[in-house]
Length: 165
Image (cartoon, rainbow, N blue to C red; front, side):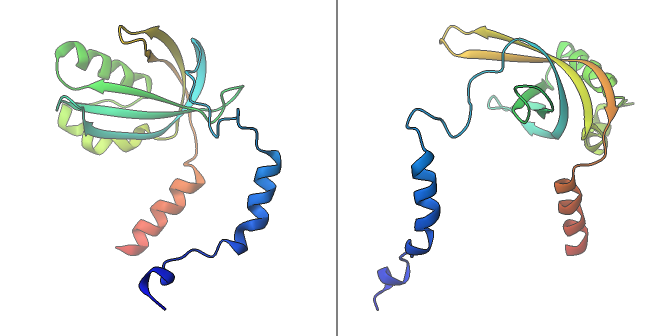
């Protein structure tokens, strides 16, 4: 057997699932909804918060928020706190305050970023069309609702991380 034959996927075992999907597939259906979430207020949970760098090279706090109820449940929203000016820091301080996270100094954010996870919040979404014709979606934190129990997936991931150390 040559090397190419070793890398061939056996599709016969997958034929049943393929036919099931094909029988209910509509070419007009999208596998996911990538349309903007409309303007409005939504309840979200903070799924992820990370300190990272923007495309421009500036520090930022990137929030991944999941809508928890209604027509848009499980859809994601993102919020970015740029870490580059006193105006940006006022937005950051406001968002952290809403989540009941307080900093004495900015360097404390490294230890506190995990405290943002699982916060249930009310946010406002506002959409605007940019000069390039693309939708620019803004997400604003309104209020803290409660701190939820850690998600099961994150708990299992954390447990496996602890076991591997």
